[in-house]
Length: 401
Image 1: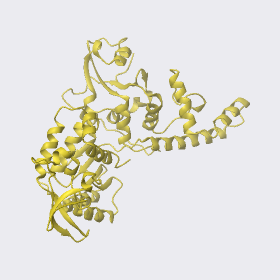
Image 2: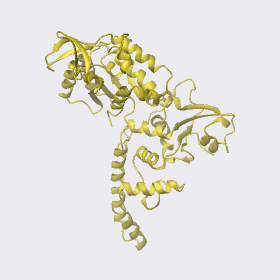
Image 3: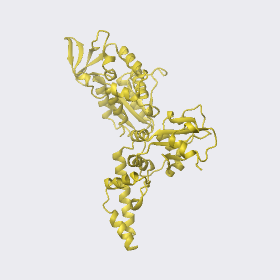
Image 4: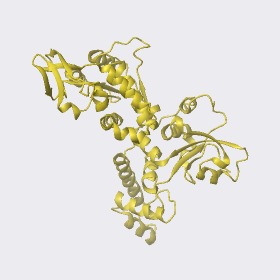
């Protein structure tokens, strides 16, 4: 019989998460992974495992494709590179421990010799072979050793064994009216000073204004819904917060001063003012929990129509007038006559030694983009259609990678 706090990789119970079920669920699952279904209509692997003991007509459970879970882990710091580095450190400790026991008998000495010099690639090939044979090992056989960070271990398990789905039952004591993460946050999670990769958790994205926040929030929800609960935004309208590059710098300095533990991403426009203010922050010693970044260079911005004292000219506006609207797609940037909405130069920025410009009729471009985000297209279709926005979101997701 299963415990409702068991987490499964397909049909295999992952015992390592028993004592930290809430924390594991917060990392592995998003709010839209909750299912309430009759047993007969539950996901196949869930139905197969619980059918022996589950007596109720309905089952409440969390289920996510393993590929989605792996992506959530990666965004929270569990990249393949970091996990392999941790494997190598754990392996070195493992070999060091075995060497202290050398001399027990000839068979034991032979096992030590067989494991000496083992690379991650050799270990992965061995594990992959076992997975293909349908055998599940927790770092099995001679290569058995434990990770301090169970989530790094689990991330490598997903890479090697490639299960279909990760799931767990949804406790009856959770309030069905509340989102998953609200229920999970009711129980505090202990932190330990161990050799682990620190998950980034929920990150706060600070932008130059309400429009930027509205665009990014809608884009993440539509294009990467599995990450939507992992990013928060400042409410400019509710709290009457001043927008702009300079106020954003002041906000970052305020958060840095109170040493907030939450991860914070300060996103400046790729224009004269944004470049100037990012340079201001780079001269400060910001806490490791804060990342300051400017919008990436826009491909469409390399040759873009501008209006200035010399009339209409095509110029590279990256670093001078590249706002988030340049990532909304050509359709949103095109006016009713089929022309790109031009950037109008406004003033000279002495600190960055370049002109500052702004896109004309930004609101029309934003409206067009937000409409597309609600069109009903799939996340994959939106990512393909809005390639530049997809690249921007990936840059944000990797800010702490």
